Length: 290
Image 1 (cartoon, rainbow, N blue to C red):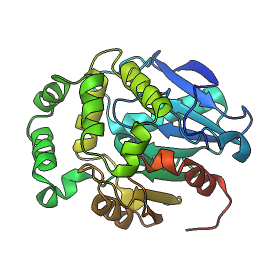
Image 2 (tube, rainbow, N blue to C red):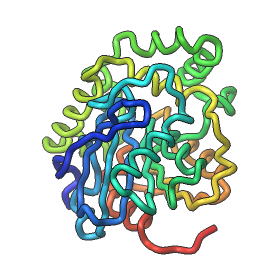
Image 3 (cartoon, rainbow, N blue to C red):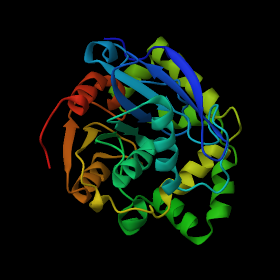
């Protein structure tokens, strides 16, 4: 099964304030629309389930968040602003009955759409809960980040930007990953696609990534307990990341009343790519789950 492939279509949509939001697409143009909220510092070019989108009839759209990739910056943006951008994007592209997927740092952005009610179904992979609500039980490194954002978000944002670039991010995500993730990172086609997405993610500098980090490590401006649509919470049982360990995944699933926890025992943090077809199939199939 093909894990990643170059985008079949590229473009951008004008937001109500005049900004451009850049996007990439895979799959049939008249397929079931699924929006991907990419992981940290990766651009719209890194899709998933490339070998399955046509077979499943999925129109996969991935969008660069403001300040990343080819999307215009939006100074001072918040998590609450992302559903507005997604609504405008959906209207421009005709994405009726939109499903949303979030990966890693993109998880809170996907859940913001679910909480707003603009996602008919949601899948999140390798994510965690609102860290600010469980600071005392977090690993020391993450607790320090949460406390820094709570104390002085501007200073924290500057600190997150310092030294952040595509090479530093590559070193971080590959430095201590699980064996299944290492095997995928060692695959030339996936490594090249991931590195390209990081390079494009930092094309405007580290500001977009730093802003995302402040937003995800700060208090989320919505309650995941208010989500009424179905949410699949996917995790790899071998995930070694301190940012989205299986324990954090369990905490997220427990906080969402409509969540179904999906643990793939043999997978790591890259479960979105190693099991992308399964994630997409479960997301788009009809089911009555409240």
